[in-house]
Length: 194
Image 1 (cartoon, rainbow, N blue to C red):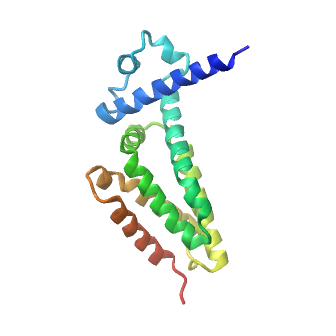
Image 2: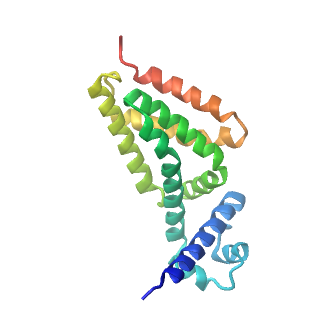
């Protein structure tokens, strides 16, 4: 039977490993993020402390992707819950997403490294995100807030635009300006005639 103290210690070790891997991915890239390098960064005595939690890099990278998504959702949830109507929800989603990314550049760089190196850790999260966005566009069309359009195409386009602002944010573009540009683009693209 696992005690609450042991469970917290196990979770703390897991978080320590994920944190070290995120830093390495962001600094050195996917190939250099080995279990040996993670041990060194995290101050661990043995790779067994990593393999206790993660069977391999793909499992670790999946945990990193899940953590980034969970952190983003927790960050954005209060703003999204306060939004009323499809148009306001779209605007809020864009602003909150860009704000999260700007404040979590290391996590975003790590996630980018995982995606660009052919890992499948992001696939499920990406599909889920696109499906939720398509639902937003469909609901907006039903309510009359958005013009008729292909909700799936609009969702894929918005997801790509959001994913694509990492580089400008990392280069120092003003996050508010970046978000407002995206808001303008997608407000014009979805605005109902009237």
